[in-house]
Image (tube, rainbow, N blue to C red; front, side, top):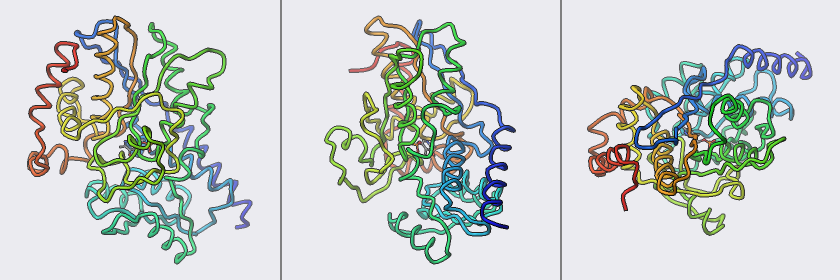
Length: 357
Ligand SMILES: *Cc1c(COP(=O)(O)O)cnc(C)c1O
């Protein structure tokens, strides 16, 4: 098929997929110890591929197609710790393109199974150079390396077009609450924080006072980069919280739109998943635990300062993908982290509305 015809059909297929999907829910959680400070959770686990990466994958495919980077029958390659690969495998199949994910061998088997379920192939590596391997593989196979860590911030239409920020503000406009004090997200590519941060500065019509907080797990350079501005920072070990925290400063991580960063210990993240399970009656993925710890800390500040108002955060994906890790007692024990004492602290925060000193 001529390239131009293939491009048109590909875009039509992606548009049709968008129209088959509804917007994601904005859940509300009222904790009695935080009067006037509701927590809203944007539930990104309900996308057809189960995570916020569904939005990113759609944007990356549209961007690549419109740039003339994808061709009929040619493979798409990605460097991914799992969730992006799951969503991209889905879109590649929709377009009839082969898909290969380059990922660390430690990626959870449930994620690998999902990538294969959507017709993708997994290429495991033992070092951290997923980027170089993905580029080499793309050259060898005469395919295209999608490169989420470079293009996430620019592939998304950050001014609108139903991006995640516009969707949150549209849904909040129908609530009895004023604008959120804080939106709390975590960063992997940094694409989500870039979209939200730019949108709240730009947002047409009104003056938005909402601030953007980004939470960062252990084994990530983002927090130190936020403080120092040093783009050369690197780490040799990868983050334990799948999807967030990076060993290098990713090109898509936009520092200037972030108002505050909060470091969250991994033990607090794992404890938060248990607290959230009790509060929501369901299991969420690891990064949602990190988000929840940051949101609780900010809610405590609003409470202490006597400035009530909503806080918004995100359910990035569901807990089903992590049965063998965050929800497995043996796996948690093997980390050697004191999750139990963090669970007591977080239970106390939820009960008292106060952050421990
Ligand atoms: C990618 C990812 C994030 C972070 O989103 P970015 O837009 O890439 O910064 C958070 N949680 C999960 C589960 C992810 O896969």
